[in-house]
Image (cartoon, rainbow, N blue to C red; front, top):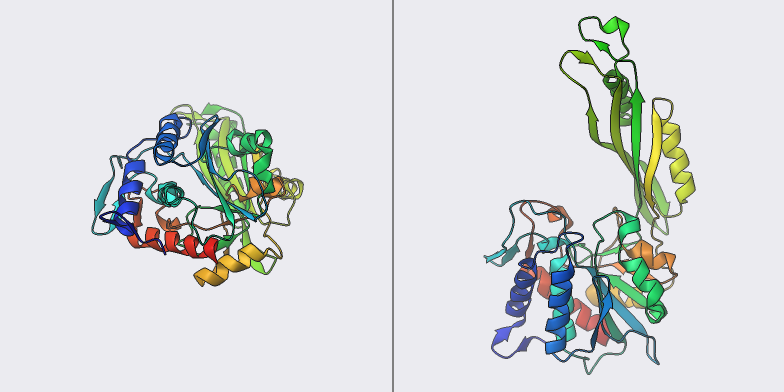
Length: 361
């Protein structure tokens, strides 16, 4: 087992690396500095690595050979800062923007790559870093990377290192973003009976949507929840004007096994009796791998719990390219995207050691 290099313990190395990565700002569309940093660190460490263009970095083995190929994949970008930069290490916890989602995972990936080909490894290992994951599906840098790097499509399994608390999360839900517009007739607020209040129309529509219960869908033995939420609202002209328009943004999550078309149809059924609905984006769900021996191996060596991924992740992009992928990473989902984002150093060590056992099983 690899547990130290020089005077630093594994925990020290991982904590230091994650803090270093946190302190390189990389909000979506501003990942270039972090991509160059990762490229430089790996190159200086003697790792076979290349700039794959468009904020993407590929290291290690990038094409299937005689042995099974496992890819570890992680996104470089974060959500916008919330006063949580620079990061800090305190009482065994790394704090800062992206600490959980997903610079914790990037730190584990970098340290595994720097450890070099493990002599006991029974698979080949590649590392894929990419940008713009936190943006709508169509903006992701990953799908174009897979199109111009076909060797990656030969992978036997991709471990997408999204925050999972070191559990295995299989599949992922689809993600629809839509705009719901309510129209009325403007008028003076002193004589509202002569107008038609679009905000009131929106209120009735939102109330109906809020009454829709989550739908549990079983897929490959896992239960995913289909849910729909109003997430933003805007409308109004002035305090003495009855508004003639109100716009609500909607987010829907749907289970694997539900087609993108069927999910859109259900959302229209819920919304269109009340207002006009425009679908702004639809990121498809990700399949649960069936009969993949490497998935079973990861579960066994880590003693991992398996759960459905109740979020959208790049597993869907790999699934669309017909590559088996699962979610496993050290970050805590409960801290993702929060002002107090953080990750325990002990979780970094657990993730690293689990992956070493997996690769060498």
